[in-house]
Image 1 (cartoon, rainbow, N blue to C red):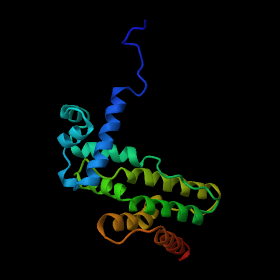
Image 2: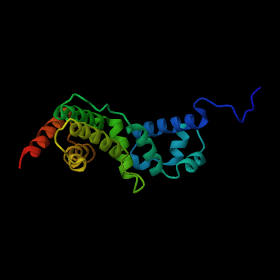
Image 3: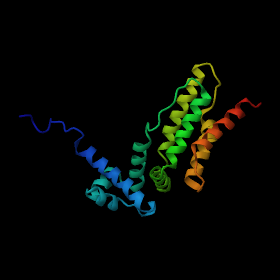
Image 4: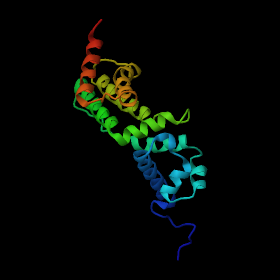
Length: 188
């Protein structure tokens, strides 16, 4: 019989606890205002002791950052049609559709509102996706575009609408943002 200290548990308790806690956060955000979310409430829903959450995450802001990071990492396929315009239109339409989802929106708002340790984990991933699209265009010999200004022009309005207004950021609206942005690149 193998020594129990050398046995590997598939997924392990840690992975199961993390999955239960992430699921509990999503369920609670769907039911309640983000302001009422606490580590003890998440622990109760997940079926773990609150000290587990305090030890692993330390604060609700750190927990929300972890949940958002897990949710947003590589959740969208970066298109590669061979056309910058087509790739940006498809990608931004997918981003707009994603942030219009009520569960995604609740998580984004809670993460942003959780304080300085929070922020929105989706920003880093979205910038990485946008940079990949722009880099492919440059590799094809196309227009050199600054990722930060493209993010400001394209992502800024999508997230602004999603988080701060009742106006939906629809896929069609997002595609018009890309058309407008690309037109500004060709204007001297």
